[in-house]
Image (tube, helix red, strand yellow):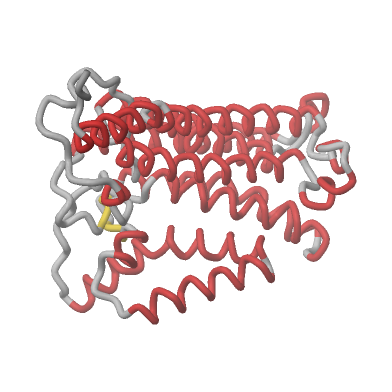
Length: 336
C-alpha cells in the first residue's frame, strides 16, 4: 500500500503536532504569573500578622534564610518570578502561533493581581505604623496618615487596572513602530516597588539609622501613588527589549549594557535591581522634561504586542491558510 502522505506532508503534520503540544504553555506561564502574585499577597499577610518581625520565620532552611530574610523579601522575589513568567508567555504564544484575544485578556487579569494588588500589599505591609492591638495608642495625625496610606495603595491598584484596560483597548497590531509605551508599564511600576522593598529588607535594615528607615517606610505609599499616576499618564517610556534589539544601536553597546547589568546583579543584586527599576520609572518624566526644553518632537505611541525578536522565525514558512483552524487557541501578548 503506498504511503498516505509524502515526506513534505509528514514533516508539515509533525510540525503542526508540535505547535499543538506547546499551545497550552503560554496560558500555563500566565497562570504561573498569577500564582506568584497570589503567593506574594499571602506572604504579605503573614508579614502583617508577624508585625514585620518575622525574621527567620520566613523559611525553615538555613540556606534560604540567608537569601530570604523576611516574608516581604520572599514576596518581592515571588513577584520577580512572576515577571519572568509574564515575559515568557508572550514568547511562547508567538512560538506556538497562538496570539489570541483570550490570551490577552487572561494576561491582563493576571497582571492586575501580580503587578497591581500584590505590590500594593507590599507597600502596606512595609509601611504599617503598628499592629492592630497598638492602634489605640496612635495619635490623631498618625491614624489619619495610616488611612491615607491605604488610600494611596488603593490608588496604585486602580491606576494599574486602568493602565491594563487602556492597553487592551488601544493595542495595535502593527509591529513596525513598537518602540515606546504610553505611560509606565505595570511590570515597570511593580519592579520599582519590588526593588525598593528588597533593598529595604536586605540592606537598609542593617546599614541605615532607624529614623531613616521609618521615614522611608512612610514614604512608600506616596511613592506607589506616584507610580500609579505615571501608569495612567501619556508620558512615553521606551520598550527596553525592542529599543536594544530592534533599535539602530551598535552591537558593542548592547553587549556592554548587558555585561554591566549582569556584573551589577552578581556583585550587588539588591542595589542593582532597585537602581535599574528606579531609573526606568524615572526615565519617562526625565525624557519628557528634556524634550520640552529642547523642543524635540514626541514619537508617536504604538502600544506593543511584541517584546523583541520573533521566536516564530525558528520554524519554517507559515502553513497554508486553514491548516490551523482546528487548533486550540491559547495566548497572548505582554508589555502592559
